[in-house]
Every structure is written in C-alpha cells, then in structure tokens.
Image (cartoon, rainbow, N blue to C red; front, side, top):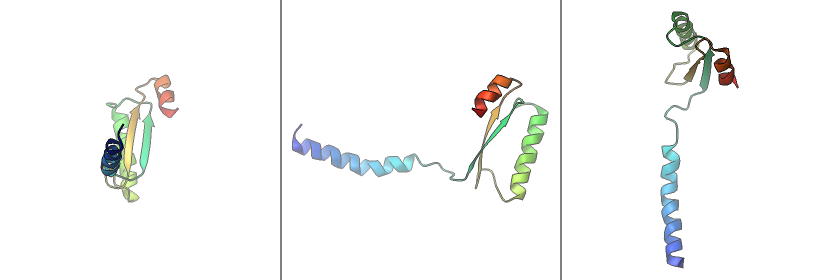
Length: 87
C-alpha cells in the first residue's frame, strides 16, 4: 500500500468515527428496568400489575419514556422460560 493511500484511509476513518459513535447512542439515557413476569402479555392480571407498577413509578417521579425505560419479558406460564430471562 502506498503511503498516500494509507493516509487517506486513516483520515477518512477518523473523520467518520465520531458520527458512528453518535449514531449508536440510545435516544433515552434513563435507567433501564427489566420487568420479568411469569404471566403472558395478554393476561388481564399481568396488565393490571404492569399498570400499577407504572403508576407507582410515576408517583415517584419516574416517567416511562422520559427518564426511565422498561423492558418486559413474559414467561407465559413456562417456568423454564422465566428462568432463562432471569439468567
């Protein structure tokens, strides 16, 4: 490789590197809560529990999507699946 080609390659990667880093930043930088439940997503009891949990967070000043994130995992009645989520 010629020196000029090498310098171009280094300069090109250095110029694009900051853009790649910025593109990988999450839109919301709040804490992430993993909510794991043994119930299925369409279970009315599960929905009531999630609604109560979100309301309690909001009462404490945590707004989902603004300053906190929640990822839900649904066991759907399968204990092995729930254990895998926890692991």
